[in-house]
Length: 416
Image (cartoon, rainbow, N blue to C red; front, side, top):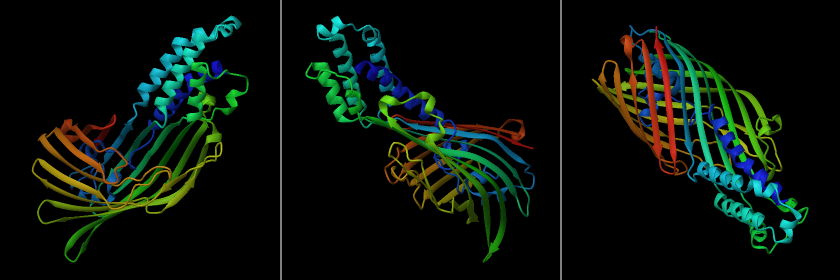
């Protein structure tokens, strides 16, 4: 039984980690990534360019100048990982421990049991200690990818947008009774007998949501009380896949990660909208609402566990000052970002700036904080290159925060 336990434990945590990174490669922090905006703290409601406005605030598509041409983003992508318990390192440690004793365990004889199976006791003790260290550990990943085509027009600019975004949360639920039993085997106070494995209750839970939007954005500038106000809207088809990979920690099987028995899906309609106005001199105010239609989507029930993914309106306001080579901006969420019900919500505030050093070089930096304290605060930085008379745009950004939080974003754009 202990031999079976150790062998399966060696696979469990790498499988959990694989699920995290496989899912993260196609998912997102909010509902979009834009390397320019992400380098400036994740802002963009009032500071996006006309070509990336479809991602952050469709109303800003009216900011295109008469000489601006068709803008293509192909692609915009990003990822953020928080591994505050250093789960990655601990997976390596427990794998190394299992490997070190594997040969001994595989060659146990009856004589070894007669002399008290010291090698088995040592191996079981090490695994118990490392399981204790893994108790309650978790890791989170978010990522996203988008492709957009924006066609400027003085009357009705429009854009086509396809984006995939989501989140994944993995947690080790180690039962104290399992640790007590394994430590008992290690110190000789417990003699393993067939059937003991039925009493091991530790589990691993991986929740993931992948949302794909297919939309068409339009915008128009109106004059309201003598003030120019742009309004944009993005109706979209929304496809959602939810994964609830919940099982006994000792029975995790890598081949089951993509099994349909852990997956549920749903297709529905949603809409994003925004407004923007320029006031005073060099100031822009923006307001946007993403996913204005609320939806509650249940995961499949797996081994008695079910969760609900919440799609809720995310309303964000932004303010930007732009003059010469400088842009300064800030965004504040007016509503919470919801995900799975079992997770805490987030509500962000961000500030950032850009300095256009040359016609083809831009430097950026910023800061983002979660006002709900459920996510790590991060500093951000990046740069942009726009050679060939701004026909090509290459933007890169990175984020870093406490508790082993990091992120990377890239974007490639073309103007024709």
